Amino acid sequence: MDSSLKGKTLPTHVDNSSPYTYIDHGFDIHITPPLTPKQDVMKLFLDTAIVSDIEERLDTGLIAGVTTNPTLIRKSGRDPWKVYTDIIELGVEDLSIEVNGESAKELIDNGVAVNKNYGNVATIKLPCTVEGLKACKYLTNIGLRVNMTLVFSSSQAILCSLAGATYISPFIGRMDDNSLTGLSLLHDICDVFEKQKVKTQVLAASVRDVQSVGRSFEFGAHICTIPPKVFDNMAKHVLTDKGLEQFNADFLA
Image (cartoon, rainbow, N blue to C red):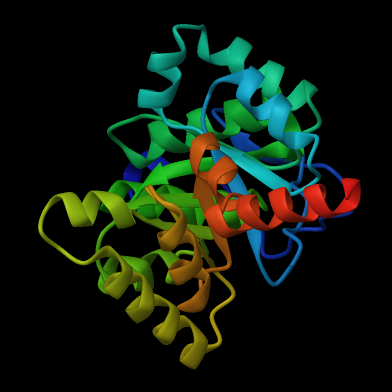
């Protein structure tokens, strides 16, 4: 085991019905166990840190969670911790919060701090690196949800699953930006996970248009996290508008 993880006792069993502790530097830290993700056929998350955008779309009853990242937080122009608090106060039940750190120990400590502040609503978001995988293994062993992000290959997805990740986030649009085929990667990952009966859920990220949402679910993604504008556009179609215009005219005829 990494020397930085010494002193942290991995439990052999986690009872998700009650809080528990882990030992760090000689004192106990209280952990709030997360809720087990519901195994719905399809789920939509919003990918934003703008609280008003989230509030407006939560009213539809169609949003199952929210993902954030440091770039989205910076663009919001607000203190990250206040943003997370405001989002949770809206009633969001699954919020991905990214933590930073160069070592597994730093990532673990920051992940535990997030859980301590936000409880079972928080999903700890970690990068798909060797240190991130170590941290994922530890945090999932103590019962926390983990979203492994910046996944760009099937091999990375496999490692994340072996580390116990709750979600993996392949970046579809960012692959396309670099002359790679993001949806093809998503298809490959979903195919492997289905054949191996993997519990880790595939969360399609960096999804930038309506067509990619449909294709992601077609290829087997469990979740798509999308910008608010893409969510809005999913309900729009020119033929729907024309049909509604005709129906409204016929009602008045």
